[in-house]
Image (cartoon, rainbow, N blue to C red):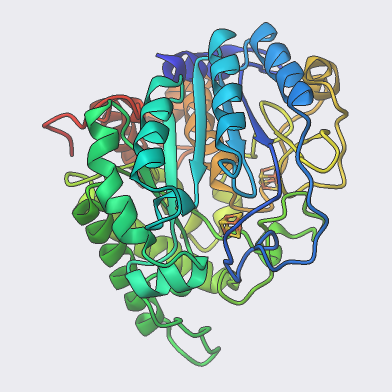
Amino acid sequence: MALLSEFLALAFAPPPRLPGQLVIQITNYCNGSCPQCGMRREAGISRVKLPAETIKQALRDCAKHGVAAVSFTGGEPFINIPEILTLLDYAGSLKIPCLRSGTNGYMFVPGAEGPDRLIPFIEALAKSPLRNFWISMDSADTKTHERLRGLPGVIGGITRALPEFHARGLYPAANLGINRCIAGEMIPPLGEAEDGGAFFESFRRGFAAFFAKAAGMGFTMANVCYPMSFESAGTGKAAYGAISDNIMVSFSRRELRLVFRALLETIPDFRKSIRIFTPLSVLYALSRENSRELLFPCLGGICYFYMDSRDGHIYPCGYRGGEDMGASVAELRKSAKNQKPFCSECHWECFMDPSQLFGILRYAIRHPFKAYAGKALDRERMRLWFADIKYYLACGLFDGRKPPAKTRG
Ligand code: SF4
Ligand code: SF4
């Protein structure tokens, strides 16, 4: 219901169109070693964490102003388990409807927590008001994933933990960050003279292997994070430290179109075996030649916001680090008031996917005849959008507290 009300509020509400979502980076500390990430444990950055009171104030403001969704991110948001459990409980006590967070899975590495601590952790998380819990995966190949993350044995540990979560009513999602190692061996950059067929097939196989792997491990839900590279961000002034120029996650525009098309063509084969959040209508737009013209401007800085762990300030998103919107969620209504959506610089799925889904809805409500006649919106995109909405409803709007329904497609 939270997502449904967010959906309707975004479709009808005037600017600044809160409620929306706030992504709070609670820390940039991390115990993972992902080479594609600026926050890996070996990175020589200054480590910070937001004071608990700063986060609690933001949560109180979110509750007061009707923000529908709060995501806790990192670094590794679960690096201090008691602290995030306390924050989740606090956010729940304020009745914020949709709470999300995730982990690199370090606690599932054999010996990291021990059974005497792991089961109590799972129990505590299941009892918390967390709605969606994601566990990151970089590759369908176990060895590659564990080497990249620096977490030996983590895939086996996650596989053993999943039934414990399910038994307690929490259904974690596998979160794939698109990179060139999704199937194991690095997929090399596409040469200018190449036609792209082999590159496309490599990603097609990689995505298929990933969804099969996630479902085989016992995941009932999956999401795909689009590449977070500087080239796709455009500005180079990113606030969020996960954004990187590493070759693993850097793609040319031509490569990105092929990657998105590979994903678009793979997902339908797996929508019945695992709930996949990634919307086909968005992938369709992203995979077109003129994708920028097909996209609705992002709602980052209008409805969606990012709070950075270094200063506790709010930015339009993780990329637009040059646009400090101040430290107060309560002030966002004023600062976002006169802004109109304009940006389509990157593919940050947290903001991109809902911006596109709601964009079509808003358009259809305001221009029903044009939308129905297929004059202004691409017919295939509209067809996929209706298929996405039908699928989202069949998946219970991806409520991580519910088991998968028997029928969806
Ligand atoms: S991608 Fe996540 S787990 Fe990996 S180093 Fe970055 S913050 Fe840590
Ligand atoms: S498209 Fe959205 S997330 Fe990307 S830079 Fe623009 S406002 Fe930020």
